[in-house]
Structure formats: structure tokens, C-alpha cells
Image 1 (cartoon, helix red, strand yellow):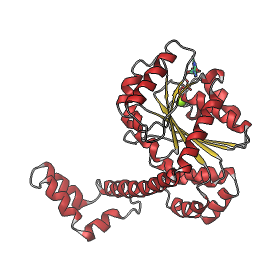
Image 2 (cartoon, helix red, strand yellow):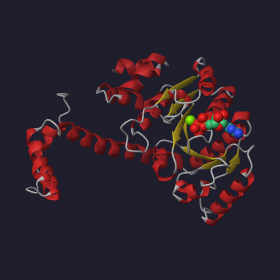
Image 3 (cartoon, rainbow, N blue to C red):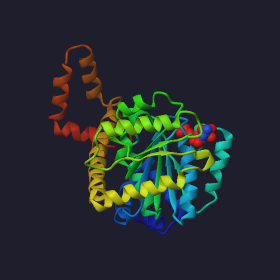
Image 4 (spheres, rainbow, N blue to C red):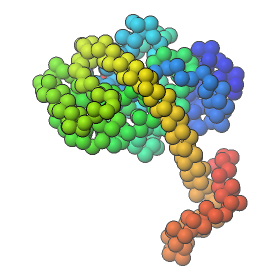
Length: 324
Ligand SMILES: Nc1nc2c(ncn2[C@@H]2O[C@H](COP(=O)(O)OP(=O)(O)O)[C@@H](O)[C@H]2O)c(=O)[nH]1
Ligand SMILES: [Mg+2]
């Protein structure tokens, strides 16, 4: 697998695709590839663009990509939005519009399946962003669809988080209250051509003032018209300001270190569960135990604790050799 990593580092597109697929499929080869790539990460800047469906995230990303290319920067895109034109879920026009970037060697686009995920952002997106980083992309853009609490996960991936709203989504302020304020480094009010954009900007600004963020970064509230390419350069300038803010205070390194630790802990947690769950249908002891729990001859809490205190049984359950 080190060979695959070498090819990723050399900028080979097929190797890059393959490395991302290994991660997605939980292939054992992914771990050694990630180890080889890791020393080459840390150069890319990762921007998360989140917001409810239809606010214009994909359009914004498309225009931002165009802008970044004009600045001579290479771009990696991870689209976690199931309705994204990248994933084929959008209108034909959108899809065709995005395809021009597929012909540009400086842009790498990958959609990420969210199947089977319990809301939130797939854990694997963190590793995928680091692969794009190692492959030499200057900027990694992550599009995630979501409202409120479900999108807190983007903080685990992005250096800067852009929360996108539109004047027409009248519940935008409610959404803010639901927890988006904790994750937003920048606010974008897209579709500024529509009525109510300035009022929404004023309302968000007022809300930010009430929250008293005087000690830290003051998130800017920006107006854009993504489809008309208005406000895109300003958005990138503001991302740059946030980046400089983080870097100058050592926050960027601190955030990234924290994210690495989180990724480790999440992976352990998810993998433990995934492996044990894989045995649920075929391990006679477990099947029996579940029946006893159902039938009240075993008590759920005590049974769980009991299982955890049996190292030999646990080792068996953590064995991941596919017998399915
Ligand atoms: N009026 C208006 N429509 C826009 C603007 N930006 C994007 N749209 C349209 O909004 C729709 C949804 O855009 P899309 O980027 O797919 O949204 P996403 O679901 O957030 O990714 C598309 O039809 C876009 O053409 C804008 O600034 N103004
Ligand atoms: Mg989209």
C-alpha cells in the first residue's frame, strides 16, 4: 500500500481516487496509506460550507472554485450533500455546470455517501480531507447539508466553517438559536438578490452582538449572489482573514491537534461498535444473550457490563475477519 501512497503524493489522480475508495470501504489497506500520507499533510486549508438544502451551497462552491483557480490555487472538493450536483442528485443544468471543473486537473471532486450514517458527518470525511491535503491541494472545500445540531460535525473537519442562509428561509434565525452559532466562523446570506437579505443580515449581526463574542473572532456576515458570481472574492478574503486570525494566535495548530485526537477517539468508538455489531447475527453466545435480555432472564445493564469484563470473549467479538 505504500506504493499507493507514493502515487498519491506524486499527484496521480487514479491513486487519489483509489485511496479515497479504500477509506470509504474501510479497507485494511487504508491505514497504512494514511500513515504514509500523514507527514505530508497540514498545508491545505479546509473550508466547510454548510446550510439547509437549496440555499446555494453547491453554486457557491462552484464559483469559489473558479475564483481559487484564477488565483492559481488547486482545489479538492468533498460533497457530502446527497442532493449535490456532484453526486448526481441535482437538476441537470447544475450537473452540467459543475462538469467544467472535471476537465480541470487542478480540481478534484469527490462525493461522499452518507448511507447508513446516523445523521452527522461521516467520520471518514476527516481522513479524506487529509488525503486531498497530502495530494497537494491548496484548498479543500467540504459541502455538507444540514440544519442546526446535525451539522456540528463540520467543525471536526474544517479550519473555517461557512454557514449559508437565504432571505427566504424565514426560520434562519431559529436555526441560529439551535446551535449553528457555535460552529459558524463566517455567515453567508446567499440569494441577496431576493427581498429581505439586508434585514436578515441585520438580524444575524444583532444576534452576534448579543452573544458578545468580543473576546474572540467576530464572524463576518456576508451577502452573496452565488449564481451571479457576486460576493465570491469578498468571501475568500474573509476566509483568509479568519485563517490569519487563527494562525496568529496558534489556534489553527490547536484546533487541528484537537481534531486529530477526536478522529482517533471517534474511530475507536465506531469501529468497536461496528465489529461487535457484525457478530450479533452469527455469534451463538451473543444471540443467546440477546434472547435472554428480550425474555427478561438477563438484565440489559448487567449483561453489557458482564460482556465488557470478559476479555477473551471481547477479543473474539473484535475480530474483523469477514465471515459474513
Ligand atoms: N436567486 C438566486 N438563486 C440562486 C443563487 N445562488 C444559487 N441559486 C439557485 O438556488 C438553487 C439551489 O442551488 P444549489 O447550489 O444547488 O443549493 P444547495 O442545495 O445549497 O447546494 C439553484 O437553482 C441555484 O441556481 C442566488 O444568489 N440567487
Ligand atoms: Mg448542494
